[in-house]
Image: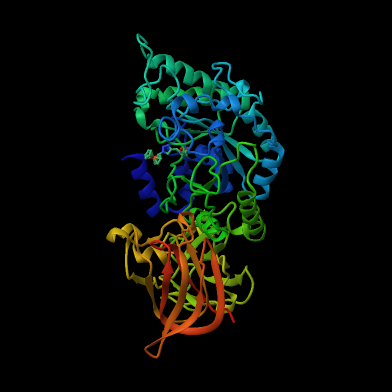
Length: 565
Ligand code: H79
């Protein structure tokens, strides 16, 4: 039987006394022959951390386009490759950055040392295309590593295997023309790459390497096994991600939350804005969304690696910095349900997510079914329930269900946190479905090119990265929402995709009472974020009527806020 087969079989039938035996089994990891127990010891800090910060920074930040990808596309190669001569981040203060990451509640950072564009942000003896050739002449990576360590943060280094700058990298990017007679020799690139990774390990002694850009070659072509062996010879406890093409220690879903998985470590990397490297006037995700991402990752037994893109001056812009501090403030109050937890037992969903530690289950609730949530039953007895975010919670446990009741006035706009204390370790519970909450149904007068990616439902999916859009030339439109049952609503929040212009110039919000549409709110501009409270009304059907728009209106979120009185 395969080792995976043994593990699944064992998990189902073996008594707890057999656990040490289980741990002797081999695991899929970056260290050949490692046992599950050895793997878990090596991964412990990373598993407990739950939250890390990703940093994408380089000469490209001067032009504000995407790192790596904009070379030879939006930015001509000759321009891109000479940006480093002007890269002089006068305000770069690594201690301030490290303090900010610490204040955000992050436990580790991942620093881009070389992206696909080939520029080394560390002092490399193997190339002059590095930070020491900038007017700043500073080892940005080195300074940052030191400052982060001083704040007690773990440090991992990002390294792109693909390198579209190196003269011996293959395949040659189609926007590059080699001088006549130049023969590319991939082996020479590999020597350079191995050399740089050796430099990173020996010089900065990171806690892990975060590879990227492996998709242009098979792991064998990268000599990935040899690469991991070299890394572990220098640093035996190193953690390595899966992007050499070998599975190594953990999976890396990008720009989305990974699926629930207790058997394989994973980390979602997600941008705080919409781009990896600095983009001026970028849209920054709301605090609610950031917490939702963090808690969905934790609830799925994964980590969140949240990306910041510092400015060309060397600052983390105030809007990003503020969001990080807000996350940190929240974590100071509610971190006990995040750090050191495992995901489950209830699967994450629209309702929220759950984590567990010791004898406790933490429920992180984002959406309710009225004043309650109905969970499937669990084998353990609930001894106590506490509403950590303030107020009173009532829990009714039967053989059929667990009903968690919290009066609407205690529902938090960010997230409501409940701790259930059990009569046994929460980790003994098998994962199971979470509660169902009604999903609003939406339809609209017009959808951009009838494209479902811009459908009316995108305005009520509680995801501010997707939007409802209308056709060009649309100057009025409506969006109708059916909540599934009558709900007492006390306000709205509307997020317009204002980066395309504040198109809405006149609108009303209506609800259907006794078969008649009643106006509860009227206004002019909406903009990036519009919130308004009104006297509570109980209704099932709601409408946003856009009476005047300069161009086809488009909306990320139309959220009806439950009345809290
Ligand atoms: O470093 C970050 C990204 O630059 C890098 N991985 C994260 C951590 C990455 N490398 N490749 N990809 C992401 C996939 C890229 C896809 C796209 Fe594109 C790049 C979509 C838009 C820009 C290529 C260019 C495909 C469409 C345009």
